[in-house]
Structures are given as structure tokens and as C-alpha cells.
Amino acid sequence: MNEILAVLYICLYKHYFKSDKKISYNDLYKKSKSIKVESQDYKAFIKELYLYLHDFNDIQADLYFLFDEVMRRGMKDLYNNLNSGKNKKTKEEQVKEDQVS
Image 1: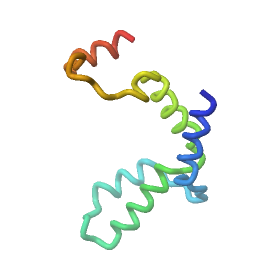
Image 2: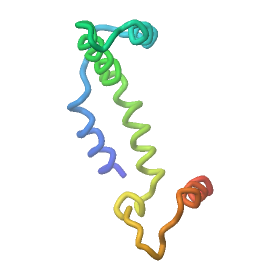
Image 3: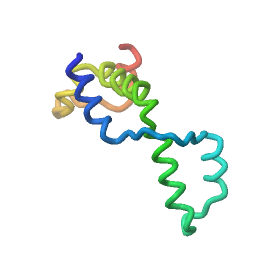
């Protein structure tokens, strides 16, 4: 499990940035309501949003949720996600199985 965690960390690390500027969710939400895609401020807004979502201070939480989801799926689903015609299940059956386990 440590190897999986290390691989996830290495993959995530290069996309996260140390930011001195504190961007709040409320500020981004207000900007998103008023900004137009055609405006010049749109690129700046997208950059702010990216930096907010990829803040290095939050990498541990993001890594935890990603690792938790990978472990929840189990090894069977990680390496063998192909269904043969005989064992094909409907979405409803798969959802019921996921809820049971």
C-alpha cells in the first residue's frame, strides 16, 4: 500500500504549487458569477481557480481521498476492469454490489 501511496504522491506533486496568496472559495464563487468567457479577466480567473484547487497546503487531503478511493475499489477492479460477455452486469447490479461491500 505504501508503494501505491508513493506513486500517487509523485504523480500529484508536480501539479501543486506553493502559494503565498490566499484565495478564498467565496471570492472565487463571486467572480465566477460575474465573469464572462470572452472577457480578458477570464484567463486570470482560470489561473486563480487552478491555483486554488492545486494549493500545496492541501495536497495531503487530496492524496488521502484519492488513496481512499483507490483502496475502496480493490485490487480486482484496479487491474482487471474488462467484463467478458458471460459475466457482464448491468449498472444497477454493479451499484448494488458496491453498496454491499
